[in-house]
Length: 129
Image 1 (spheres, rainbow, N blue to C red):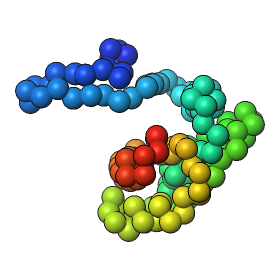
Image 2 (image 1 turned 90 degrees about the horizontal axis):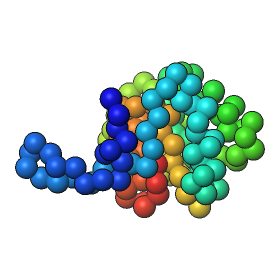
Image 3 (image 1 turned 45 degrees about the vertical axis):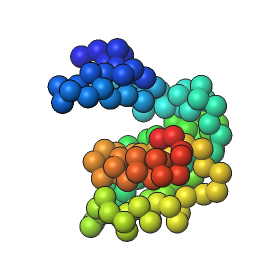
Image 4 (image 1 turned 60 degrees about the vertical axis):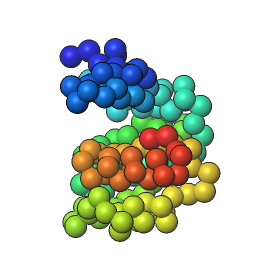
């Protein structure tokens, strides 16, 4: 499926409303993580923070960290415990309290709970993710 026609567009929904899809890039590929350093660089971000849990760190976070390091991109990491992690006020607070000052981009390493937490924190703090 080609998602490019949705990017940064207003889309009419079956609910009868129009929704704005504020997404700049979608990459669905076997080696999509290799594309992240280029996206970070082209976006002009200088103080990024990766957010992962112990499961997603092992699945993709270590690899992504290597790609960023190899590209000379400095970043911070927040590692949350996977056991009992929920998209609740504790998870939100865990990210906000660990977030370094000046962070200008959050990268959610994983989907589901990690993605939901990062999306909420980024919205509340006005930081892209």
